[in-house]
Image 1 (cartoon, rainbow, N blue to C red):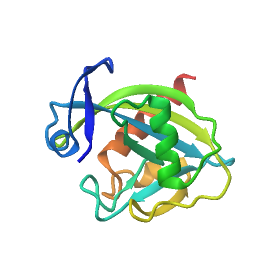
Image 2: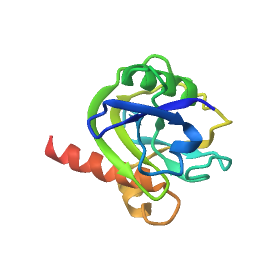
Image 3: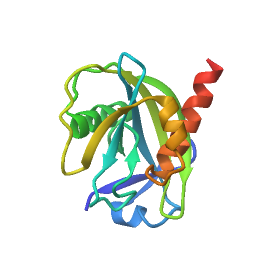
Image 4: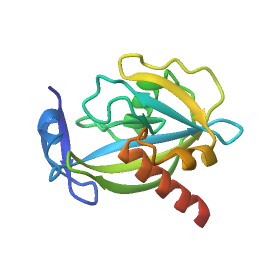
Amino acid sequence: MQDIEIVDNNGNVIGTAARDVVHGNNSLLHRVVHALIFDDTNKLLLQKRSSNKDVAPGLWDTSVGGHVDLGETITQALEREIKEELGITMINPKFLYSYIHSNHYESELVYSYKCIYKGKITFNRDEIDDVCYWNINDLLKALDDGSFSDNFKHELKLFLSYSNQK
C-alpha cells in the first residue's frame, strides 16, 4: 500500500505512513484536494461514492476529492484526481481556501478549488457509482437526509460562507 505524507496544520511534511495506517487514526493529518465543479448554470457536480469505498460508501460527495501522493504538489494531485475520477483534462481550477476536516476516522488538510466545466464526463466506475449536477437550493434542502458524506456537508457550508464573503 502506498505511503501518504503526514503534515502539520500548515501543510509542512513531518513524516509518512501507509494509507491504511492514516485511515483509522485521526491524529495523523494528511493532505487532500477537492474540486467543486460547476456547470455554466451554476449547478454543482457531485459524485456518488462507490459502495465499495472504505470512507463514506454510497454517499454523495464533493465533485472530486483525493489524497496528495508522496512527493506530489497540490496542483499535480488536483489535476491527477480530476482526470482519474471524471476523465477531465482541460480545466482551469481556481483556489478557494484550505481547512482541516476531522472525524472519528481521519483528519485531512483540504485544499479546495472551484472549476467551471461544461463538457463530457467519463467517471471512473471503480470509484464512483454515479454523478449528477445539483442546484444549490436543492442540495441545502436535502443536506441532512443521510445521503451526503460528512466531509461534503462541511465543504458545502464553507463554500457558501466563502461565497457570501466575496
